[in-house]
Image (cartoon, rainbow, N blue to C red; front, side, top):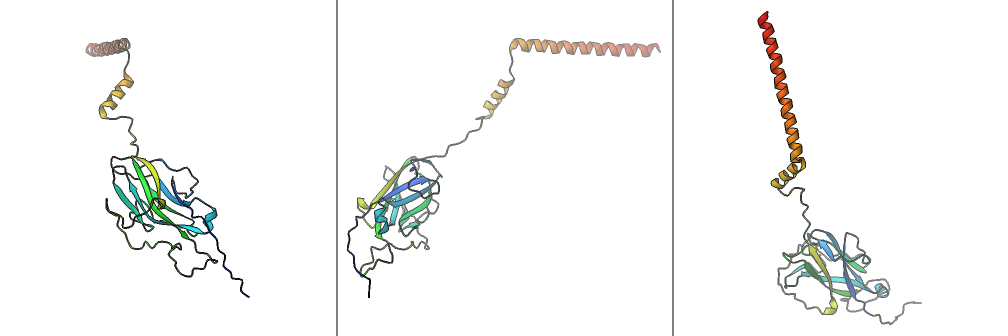
Length: 239
């Protein structure tokens, strides 16, 4: 006796969200990063917005680019593979494509602080024991991307070979500022010299009194030494 049967059903296709957070913890519930400095550690997290659909659907990242308002654009991920490992890592798919994440570092274009991270993404059908596919397997979630072949970062202004609808695009806006320069207590030698002299300055009357006292002590010392030397000289002559 066979227990196999076919159950028909309709599941709403979920949408995918992109969340960028600071640090190295792939938690989409963390506060999204909005203001970062160049070189700050970031993590890109792509996740489904519906837990009910998570048992059926998975995530696949096609490509990601960084864009600025004046039109400059740089592709950083293609088919889940990093085009610049310094900027971002290869996309990883834990938990059978339920979410995806990639490590990265904050960077910016010259003279521009605000950048848009745009990714072309798609949902796919997760593979599980009860799923039987009889014909087309194009909608099944692929395995981890094969990034063994070194890929070059696309040049600025290169046109994508595939046109994605707005339903397939996710975005995250970042403001990236330069690292703060920690200045020294003294900006230059002259300033340092002035600060040193400011520390030992005193009132003019006190300075005059101190100078007079020192001069008096000096004269008294000279007088006493001269008198003592003269008395010794006379005593030796009398002998």
